[in-house]
Amino acid sequence: MHLELPNRLANFIGGNFIAPTQQQYFDNCNPATGDVLCAVPDSTEEDVQLAVTAAQQAFPAWSTTPAEQRFKVLNKIAELLESNLDALALVETNDNGKPLSLSTRVDIPRAASNFRFFATGLLHFASESHSMEDKAINYTLRQPIGVVGCISPWNLPLYLFTWKIAPALAVGNCVIAKPSEVTPNTAYLLSVICKEAGLPDGVLNILHGGGQHCGSAIVAHPAIKAISFTGSTRAGKEIAAVAAPMFKKISLELGGKNPAIIFPDCDWDTMLNTVIQSSFANQGQICLCGSRILIHASIYEKFKKAFVERAAALTVGDPLEKTSKQGAIISKMHFDKVLHCIEQAKAEGGTILLGGHAIKGSGRCENGLFIAPTIIEGLGPHCKTNMEEIFGPVVTLQAFDDEADALAKANCSDYGLAATIWTQDLTRAHTMAAQIHNGIVWVNCWLLRDLRTPFGGFNNSGIGREGGWEAMKFFTEQKNICIALGTTH
Ligand code: NAD
Image (tube, rainbow, N blue to C red; front, side):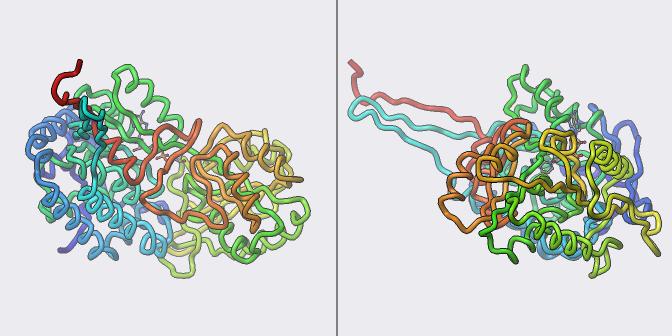
């Protein structure tokens, strides 16, 4: 198949590619060049209603389709994502600004893995049975919920979109999904792929538009019984406020302000190589990036020198160039926000050790939105810079004295998504991992993902867990059936 992006994206409803009811569109730009890529439907509640109707019509057949058949079609989607890797990676990079090497190596392969993982998972999904000796037997059915909503952000566009859609479909739901309005392009191509793969009409409906008109209408629709959301803590609060009184199931994967804790006994080279990644990969726009680097006081100066040197060598520029390690920031609004946060850090008394400014692109990227990798020191744990999510190529360095001090500094955040600990001392690693307030703890690694493990955060980082059986359970309702064996008294 040949994937091509049209000048105007269409919604994918009931297996048809259709224009938004109100005929309203907005422009979608390449953040590395400023070029307009396409017009995006500004969908509204009328479009959400059309999608809900299509999903409701598709549900009886899809929810009773044999597992083997559901596996085949979801696995076919995985295969088509893989066989179109290069085309999809290029579209993702043009839409998001991330280096093409990253889209090719991480984003698109992971999107394919998401579909393959949950396609195979559905063949093994089972539920419990509880025997009450000779009195009764209980068994639990896990049934699909019906029509569910999946809303995703711009930083890992197809990767996170498919991470929600695949488990929802696998267990037999019909889905209304909305990608971020700033990175809708691979989601559009996914609709083309689903059609080609033979996914029945109406099983997956992809709507394009903003959070205000389209996202909020998905959340508020009474027939959409569960919402799986990844995005900002701000939007997560708004969604919870609407969905909770309607008693919808909600899974919220929100922001982070993650600590990377470095002890003197770590494997220095592995640590340094990885902390460069965990700080600046995807221009620091990954919810799991370690933006607060905590270093044992005895190695603070050594780390600072080596880290600044390594970060200074990261080439920032055209995402299509093989040499570029850092691409563009997603949008002008976000670019301004990140630069504002850097000014705020200075006003709070921080010292800029590296970067701290925008970078002018060249050639086709002269209008691109680039920010230099930025390293800041001299700020305490409670200042805004260390408490609020920046979500850009900006990290702070803080020294700590001992394990207790490291834990206190790591845990003073309102967020609790992911922590990284660098030490060769197993006892210390286990003890600290148990005490740290984060849903994910990496020891001597970062972003090493096993899709079976629970994924999610504490506190302002959200509620619920994605991944493995957690995601498949989220997208089902449990029903316990108790059968008396003979007389019960
Ligand atoms: P965002 O909250 O602005 O938007 C995310 C999605 O929600 C978009 O599709 C948007 O249109 C929609 N949306 C916005 N307001 C809405 C509302 N009131 N109702 C329904 N939908 C709404 O987030 P973003 O700027 O796209 O993404 C960056 C944020 O996402 C960061 O905070 C980052 O930490 C977080 N994130 C978290 C994870 C995680 O797994 N925890 C992963 C990636 C990104």
